[in-house]
Length: 130
View 1 (spheres, rainbow, N blue to C red):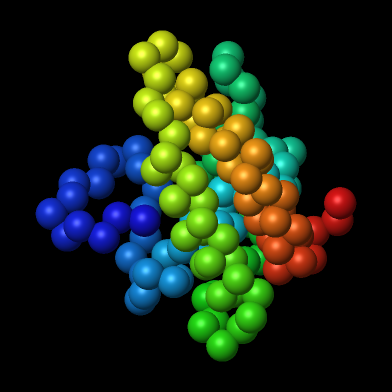
View 2: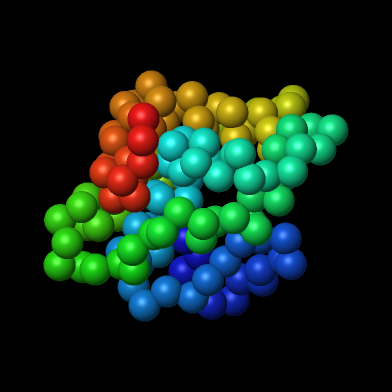
């Protein structure tokens, strides 16, 4: 979630304007849940470094619009806020580049139990088969 209006968004960054911070966090929670990635993976092309073109399929699962009155939606936004806190505490690695840092953040989220709770909530939201 980028809240600084002076930020510059590169052409390769996925972004969308949202009506509230809670809506932005809800979308981040859905898009970053491991089960969401797995739901899209069968449709992705595969390159030398694995699956690619994630951006072409992010709306393939029928993701409901954010509804601040829905408990599950608010829950997902709260989980995303917790994930932000955990990710903020992960030290940048000197070796491994962004891939190493991404791995360390994923591991920290799993260790904190956030990944599992995100997965469970997104499975319920999107009615995914597990």
